[in-house]
Image (cartoon, rainbow, N blue to C red):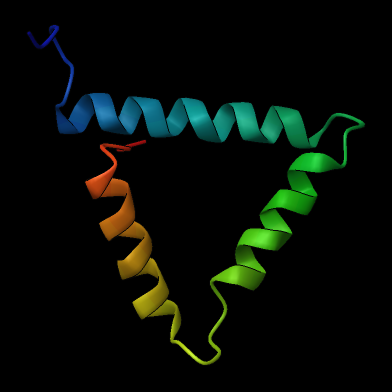
Length: 70
């Protein structure tokens, strides 16, 4: 059963904004893990043997197949 506001574009935007806010807050801290993880993500999705577009489509397919929507 879906809760009120769950699964709507507005709730998605709210979750995305909260994620951006928390990421910005985390980046201000002393830990180096988050920036390193972001750099890894950029390197993984950079154009190479496969284009960035194809890598993103494959990641989307895996996320959908695993019911991982966030």
